[in-house]
Image (cartoon, rainbow, N blue to C red):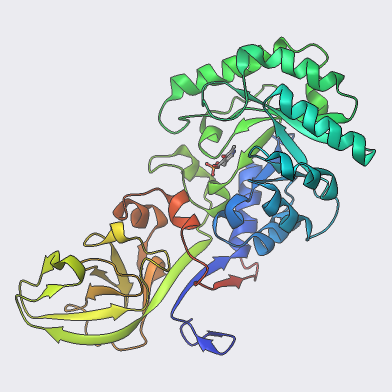
Length: 384
Ligand SMILES: Cc1ncc(COP(=O)(O)O)c(C=O)c1O
């Protein structure tokens, strides 16, 4: 890969996105669910840093039913891929963004009567109804109408002449580690829906489950869609997840190159703040990536990288553009060698989970923190 170049610039730090794996993952997730369950592909934040256009195009091809993005700017970028694909905006709109709903044919999330009135006015002005998904807060304490008040808001939506209720949903607060509370959220959601007369659940999207939710999704229930982000990128929501049985594969890998190799004497302190002192003569490699690429400073003195198939620990603080690693035990390390931050090299692997753990963060944040400076290279062949 290191012989590759983007626009004739050699690669210093890059992410490789395996679109064929993405497609296989979507199909595996679908196959693990009852056939009537529709697939809402969560592609907010530039498709979790993978690149919106490439990722969404492949997910369309693979059979996603609906796309969920964070805001109208992301939605407008997605709409460039073509008309017709249903797009749901998950975050609240600012009033000055409302017009974008009609312009880009988007569905909005509704949590309040104020939003109902605003979006109804958009539909009125456009001369066609605006699709909306009613969000019910069952214990996340973020977006959505509080579940006890959901029936009233549902009636308001159904009575609004220029809105079309296209879905109802909720979002779990701790689906990975609090099964009892997740079950209580499901119960509150279904109880709220039962108190909404006039709702035709089989004609709209009814969704709650993100990746971790899939572990406890009931076999038969009114839920007829899932809202998946992380798992489609081949990353488990937590280390002991039952979703390992789905056998998704990583889509994202992250690499840099060795820019300099040198020997430093025992007692030398390394990098800003002098947080690491070399106990003996050490061969160090200076990598062409730092926190301005998405290798977080919190990985200082904790992460490892793979060079020549061997693990090399980060020494001292990660800096803006460079990171120092110990290559004393790896024979022959040379300027230009690939250094894998996340991914496989030889028989070794650093998973996104391990990298994130070493950076004191979560995979969602790691993926969305890889910066603009890092070119995304797309692997498209379908393979096996
Ligand atoms: C409302 C909503 N639904 C679904 C998702 C997807 O979650 P996950 O990436 O865990 O599958 C997210 C992610 O943050 C979200 O905010």
